[in-house]
Length: 334
Image (cartoon, rainbow, N blue to C red; front, side, top):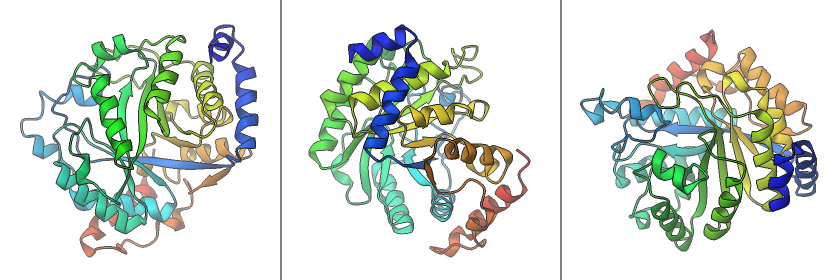
């Protein structure tokens, strides 16, 4: 573990990437998934994470219920993801945007549509017993791989409470995931803390993002992390945990990161504006990045025929949203 950290410090990241690539080949990680986080709401009762877009909205939204997405729109998005072969990364919603029973109902409908149970990323919750076969796992928003920084940047999401929730999820038979954002001030040495956290809580899946500076947050003038630093972290986690699932998020201005992140050990990629990018040169670029790693892509970012007809196979109430998403995908000028 320390050897990996020292290699990154000594600018030997390419050596780490090569080792991670060999390990991925040994484990036969030859398919890359496209992942889509489905948001339930643009409201968060906490609203104090220093990097988060929702922290800029709390004082602007007078009625939190007005920020909730229509459930039929959520389900229509899930149906389109199934058609084009994308995985649902997780259902995500700010604190107190939906009740647990409402989330369970949404997850159950998505399970019926996709034939796959979903991951949740809906905050620290005590009532995990309410969920069943519609849920595959629970995600904890660790965000910063440094406990001191976490307390400063995410003051309302204590790491010990996240850890307790994940442990309870494991006891109930659910898989466990965490999200980590790189570029919030962590150092290379903090990789050791992250590795220990993964070990302590038996994490099955890690979802990495690079900082996306949002206007109005304390990070609006910050830079995104360097690609080789990002890749070095991924390679370190892959080499330490050969069986773990790694999902990497990037942004439209950093699509060139995709190839090197896959070479470093990523199993899937995420964080794209799906309906704005689908069928565009940006979607083609994503597919090209995967192609040149020699891996197979699960799903499509360019095949408009996969979108199907503007009618739901699940519920006629979804038709108008299916139609809207298809039209947005076919007519976008992103």
